[in-house]
Length: 463
Ligand code: ARG
Image 1 (cartoon, rainbow, N blue to C red):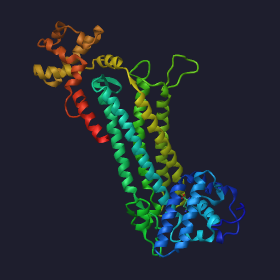
Image 2 (image 1 turned 135 degrees about the vertical axis):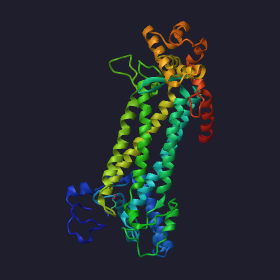
Image 3 (image 1 turned 30 degrees about the vertical axis):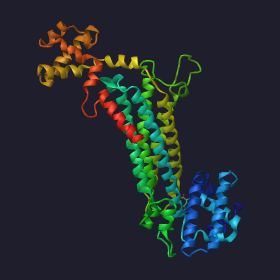
Image 4 (image 1 turned 120 degrees about the vertical axis):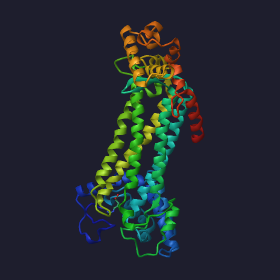
């Protein structure tokens, strides 16, 4: 079609074609061609339903189905000439169908509109991406679980404010992420279930006077049921927003661990060593091993949050029902989904390949007076001090150790007794980091026994 002629699909009342700039701003084919498989699946289901409902002859339906199969094959083979003049994937497919089967192609659009067509295509695409995220999360959780199992009882410092707080176990830290990613997974499952209603058949916005069977198309396309309100069907994009919001939370979790990897792999921490496969060198400083994958992941995940804000901004001022603004929904979601899939895979690779430096973790766990709380608890338990007094006594002991430049277990009993006369040498048993973590057996606590029980539970859940 020449640029000057009116659009073959809707140009009946137009005498001239669009300005080149109009075409550029109007066309979405550059990106919505990714919806081709969904678009063709939707059209095939629609044609079959039209025939079953007596709206289309079996002959026309068969020709349409065969033609659409060919169009999909051409697109998959890279043999399809996408045209910006035809705006979007829907009209590109239909125009090619007409070339292949002739005028019968024009009957496919009976009882539907591009408004319900794009809604069903996009829903199916986002639904698939929920499944992609769910399986990516499963793989990632298994990688964290393997790390937890390898080091269920290894001690490391637990931090608050990035200051040493109390000793914890490596396994416990790894399982913290399993919990987060399991919640992300359940959010994707919930979002998928909520979006699994079929908008096809809402037509432009009001429904149609043709005797269509929306239950049939819903079933054919794997939906639980048709949507109940035609206006909502063509104007709702909250399925995409829910996907993006869920992806943003997941991205935030990924980014927090990426940040920990960057800190932990530094020469100052040396808690972990990232594999060669996920590190890079410096072109000038030969000693460097840079955690580029973790850094890039931390940065890239901002795109997902950006896409979420962008789509909220696109949608928030739109009156019902469809507005062309909504065409701008897709690029955001496509980019976010690509970024999330890459991020999940990169993190899974990094975690699987990660080597924890057990001696460095243990040495760090023992420094920074990390067992001060254990000491205070001992004073409460054994000497019956009120916790506030115990806190005060412990603070004096920490100050003493700090002044001497040693750790708590290095103080002599005589030195401790100067601070509180009733302290006995039984206190030393709680000053070691292994005893400290072993004593944290409260529900959800860091004790290795707890960690092992949680590992067993997660193994059952993840299969
Ligand atoms: N390309 C359009 C979109 O993505 C399809 C729907 C067009 N509908 C319309 N009334 N112009 O939103």
